[in-house]
Image 1 (spheres, protein in one colour):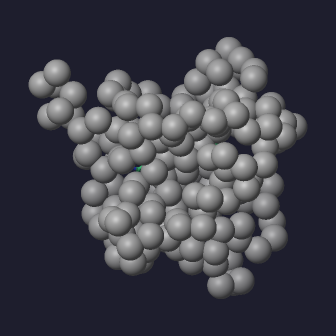
Image 2 (spheres, protein in one colour):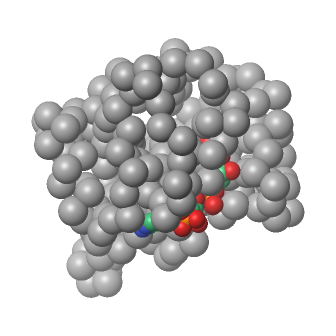
Length: 184
Ligand SMILES: NC(=O)c1ccc[n+]([C@@H]2O[C@H](COP(=O)([O-])OP(=O)(O)OC[C@H]3O[C@@H](n4cnc5c(N)ncnc54)[C@H](OP(=O)(O)O)[C@@H]3O)[C@@H](O)[C@H]2O)c1
């Protein structure tokens, strides 16, 4: 099986990844079984590289001062200067372009899946290049009214799998390639 490029995330019902001030209390206060249906552990077991934007990385720095949570090469898209780490974590800062970085990620992942962690605009940049295969989303039972957008693009999707995990409704979608979407 070939590798997939996947946006695996959680969202509020009204399509936000975080509050306007980048808080995730509405998410972290809720229960999900990481080994349950469409749970994170099934996905991370076969993920070989991560990409994220600067705000997401800032959240990781602010909230996860210990060893890197996911021990795989990670690309951080940013124009900012972040402090470096000396604990062996493989973090590569980049300004893109996303198609070149996607190639580097695929080489590093050696056949494993690529995890585009977010935010939504960065995921959109991969989708703009036809480089997004799947979206796996856990929908929290909350609306936020405003915040960081889930995915500010129009994409055609096919529903592949639906599950109930703890407090969340979880859906796995495949991205319909643009040519197929525009011919139907
Ligand atoms: N609910 C969840 O499961 C989940 C998942 C992921 C993230 N989050 C949260 O959602 C929020 C996302 O924040 P966000 O919408 O601001 O998105 P983000 O992607 O985390 O950060 C956006 C920033 O990344 C940098 N960036 C993006 N694309 C770039 C490119 N091609 N080249 C260089 N730099 C680039 C830019 O910052 P600079 O130019 O300033 O460097 C941009 O302002 C965060 O609070 C995060 O913690 C939640």
